[in-house]
Image (cartoon, rainbow, N blue to C red):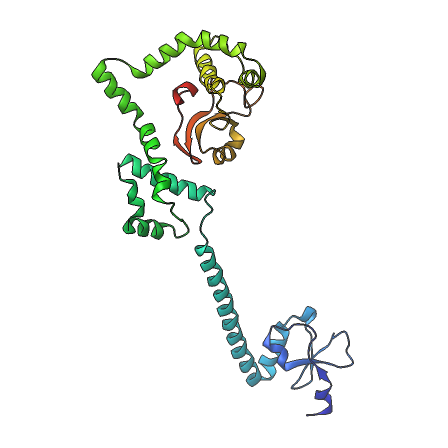
Length: 305
């Protein structure tokens, strides 16, 4: 090895390209501004450590070394790609192995769909324990951890009743020649003045809660809404988590906070004082179960109840 070659030192810092095996710097070149070929010691311009000129120098002046550098570069690229792919595969596997949080929208959507299937198709709740059904759900989404049959048994019957309310009303009308829904509202309207008088007479914390739902105008729908919201308060029940009202801009957040209840969605551009104010024409009135809508766009709040 010549004295001149001994004076060439490696490039400082991390060098990724194999081309630097054939180039170096004079030891006296502290800033490493002049790149020199280790074969012919020619200075090659390589601004900002760009390797294009270095490869070209080998290509046109040292063909054997150039071919070796290209082969080594391709081998390094395959190795890097394999490592990256392996890391990506591990990350994907870990992601797929992580179950959805029960509070996540995806988990609620799947649970709601299974519950509706059980109720609508009149399947036994034990369906969710069947191995074939479990495999089907797992194939569709491996990240979904299905709740137990006891979990579904709490809600399947409720949804079935909600979905089948209209056929029940129709059958009742056919047998008795009476309109069940109309009879209910007729009785409610008959007792509404007495209920409102009772609400106004209440004092203390009950009176304050009743005041928060606002007193109605002569509109029938609004009067019915006030009575239906007020009865649970008089009976000592806390209905704020069951009867929910929100603006359209916070609908998703409100849905996630409702286990079972009626959600009234108002437009943020409407002139009411706030989301607790009475509203005759909301954007939608929905029945919610476990954060999912089971009946939507109901005509008004009293009919949702």
